[in-house]
Image (cartoon, rainbow, N blue to C red):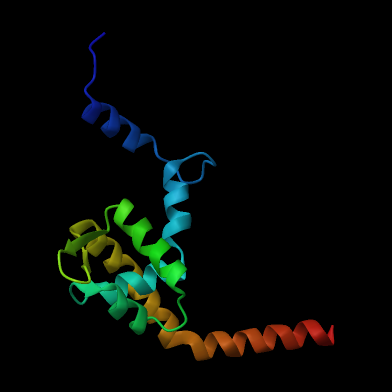
Length: 135
């Protein structure tokens, strides 16, 4: 039996990922990427390199803690790079990677859909709630 390289083992494992299985790593990734802050952070940084404070100003309502956690998660997953410049104070810039750009291309239409269809969703929710209260 031939020994496989690490790259070959990863390629074999990639064929076996199934998000419907509870222990599948892709399921955990889907959970993390489905977060609203991930979508908004990727959207904010997709325009070009952004400083932390710029991203925070652009995303209304995000706390410092949540933005920091989201940026770290995206950096860990390879969607962003973090560059620190030796200035006083230090300048930290976040840039979307090719992997992050491919994710952005998937989540951006979801953001646009939500923005374009919110009125219909609210109308549907009101109708649903009204039907439930009269029953």
